[in-house]
Image (cartoon, rainbow, N blue to C red; front, side, top):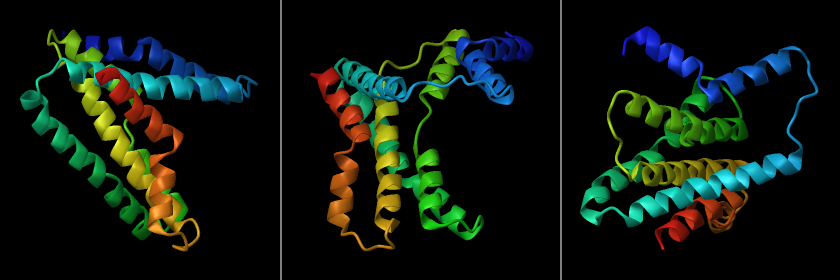
Length: 187
């Protein structure tokens, strides 16, 4: 498969076309918008589904096979938000909350990008490891948690105790759905 064919396949995928539709609607000043309830429902479904699929695949994979990739993924997930936060503070000169939002963006994983990457690997005739959704969950969770903790801790210029911030982050909807889905899927 040549580069032009790969480009055509990627640009004409339903997810990319839907993204372009959203851009076009915005440029045309359309009133197209997801109702808040639908947006919330889709977010809940997708977060749980990502965790659940990761847990199911993890239950079929021997620990020896997934342990090293999982530990490296967790380390990467914990590390990634910090450079984004520090670079945004130093070079973009943004406030702490904005820097934490950027850190959350770079600490988070795009499920759409993940799905596109899996599709790309399969289009190349390769089969990705079954535990890749597990790694997606393991990368998403700590990245978001660290960024949320940075933002919450600095929301009032450090007035909140770290314990309170961590409780808020770890019991928030995102973490409960991702990690809960992982456990449910595994069991």
